[in-house]
Picture 1 (cartoon, protein in one colour):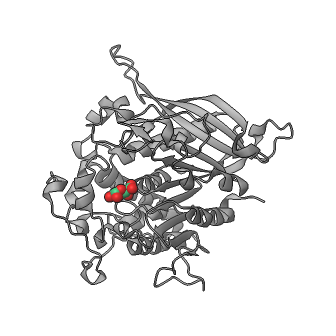
Picture 2 (cartoon, rainbow, N blue to C red):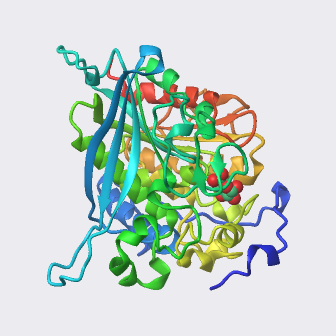
Picture 3 (cartoon, helix red, strand yellow):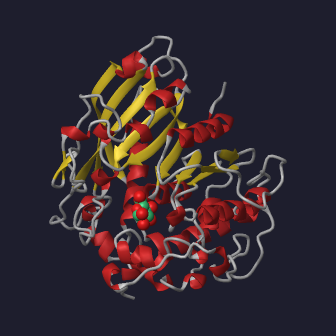
Length: 441
Ligand code: GCU
C-alpha cells in the first residue's frame, strides 16, 4: 500500500487524551491460536511468535547468520585525562551468505568503526598484570559519528554518508573536524567510566545510510540475493539493518581479546530512531543483558494504537525506509496491527528494560511509552519478576512526576523534564538502574 508523499498529507498530530481512539491491546500472554500462556515454560513459544509478528509486520527480516572480523586500529591508555582506555576497532561485516556453486558471487563488505571507552582503573585493557575484572558496558549507536561523541582529536572522522547539517560539522554529506565533540553531552563517557561501565559506540550511518536509497548501500547492499528472496513486504528496513549491525558489533567485542569488557553484561541503548533500534536489537539478540529505550516514540516504546503525536501513517510517509513495507498496512489502521509496543518491551523479559521519556517530547507520546512499559508487566510477572512498580511497590496508575523514575521492578520508566534528547539526567537513571543488575560488587 503506497502512502501519499508526506508533503501531500496534511497531518495534524493529536495531543488530546479525549481524542485518543478506543483500542484494545493484543494480549502478550495469548497465543495466536487463542490459547492462553499461563506458565513460564510456555513463554518462549509465545515470544517466538511475537518476534515473528514484528519481523513480518514492522521491521522486516534479516539473515540469521553474520560474518564479522574485527581489528584494533588504535589504543590510547590515557584518554579522558588518564581515566579511560580508548580503543578504536575496525569491524568488517561481510556478505552473510555466498553461494559456493556460483563463482560469480562476489563477497562484499562494509566497515563499522567502533569506539570503546573502558575505565582505566578497572578494565584489563590497561595491560595490568593483575588483570582486574572486566567491566559491564553500554552499547549504543550514535547519530553523527564517533568523532562527535568526544573532542579527542585522534578519533577517526567517519567517511560514511552523513546528513548535511549546514553547520561546521558537515560539508555537504561528509563529516568534518568541526563536528568534533558536538554530541558529547549525549555520550558522557567520563561519567559512565567513573561509574564502572564501559561505553561502546559506533556511527549508525557506517551500518546503513539514513536515506531512502532503495537499499543499494550499507548493510542491505551486502545481501541482495537474500533480500530478493523475501516476500516484498518483509524486506528489511533501515531499523532492521542497524539492529543487525549492533549484533555484529557485539560479535566483534566478543572476538577482541583484552578489551576489558564482560560480554555477558552489556546493555543496548538508543535514542529516538536508534531507541526503536535498541528495542528491536534487545528483543532479537538475547546476549544483551539490559535494554534501554530513550525517547523512542512511534515504532518504538509508544503504543501505536493511541495515535498520539507521530502515527504509523505519518512515520511511514516521512521515513519510508525505516520499517518494512508490511507496516504500511497499518497506516490509519493501527487497531489491525497484530502487535503493539508493550510486546516489543516484553520481548526483553526476563532481562531488565528501561524506558525513558521527556515531558516536552510530545511527538514521541510519553504517556503512550509509560502505558506500554506498564502493559509489559504481566510477562515479567509470569516469569516471576516484578514488572513496572511505583514507589509503594504497586502497579502505577499514572506516570511518575517529572525527573523521577519508577525503577524498583525489572521494568524502569522515567520522565525527564525537558525536550527530545539523551541527556545526562537520563544516563543517571540508566546507570542507577543498571547498577542493580550489571554490577557484581
Ligand atoms: C523524527 C521522527 C521520530 C524519530 C526522531 C529521531 O522526529 O519522526 O520517529 O524518533 O526523528 O530519530 O530523532
